[in-house]
Amino acid sequence: MKTFDNHTFAVCAYGESPYLTECLDSLLAQTVKSRILIATATPNEFIRRTAAQYGLPLFEAPQHEGIGQDWNFAMSCTETDYVTVAHQDDIYLPDYVKEIVQHIDEGKRQLLFFTNYNEFSGARLIDRTRNLKIKRMLTAPLRLFPSWRFYRRRMLSLGNVIGCPSVTFNTRLTGRTPFVCEMDNDLDWDTWEYFSRQKGQFVYISRVLMHHRIHEDSGTTAAIHSGLRQKEDYLMMCKFWPEPVARRLCREYNRSLKTKK
Image (cartoon, rainbow, N blue to C red; front, side):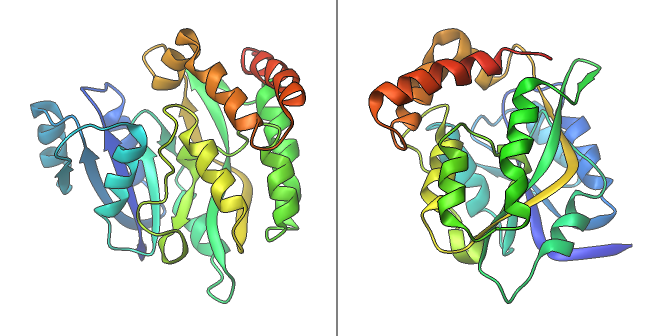
């Protein structure tokens, strides 16, 4: 069995998710094995039992300060150069680590790697929505121009096109607390915006290597219902565009998020 000991899946666990074991099973089924740990800011007996059942190290944060801080805490518990913050509701396809390893080039300044992904709701796989089509179209040029900072910023100026659970960080360049925590929902988009200004590569892998779960109990769904998502989307657009343009783009962007075809 092939292994890559310089990569870690840092699984962020919250509450008592019915999907946590499915996520862990997908990580253990990787064709190239790497390290796995569980980190939580909401410690409870369910998470402790699950960690013990799978024989995985568990790290408990002293307090829950927000999603970004929780993700940074999970990354700070790792020791490897390459780290993926795995979301407990999602599934990673068997070749995820294999593809990351194949795209690593130690001679290049690779900030982060991210992959194509599908969404699923319940048992229904969703592989082609308007939103997913737009994201794939915008990210495709990075396969040829991973170091082109101008294009990275233009790409991100049209929306959060990088699937956060698909990202692997090169911690030698990003550090072990890379997430910008000034926002509650769009903190990942804010983080990509920060690194888009840095010298180095965004390595895009066009193969679908994970499934991102959409469900009513997710933080993203709650943020959309509360209006927080729309507010922070506008603030992000203003980082790239004058306010009138940002307002118009934000309306179109949020309309695309609701499209299922």
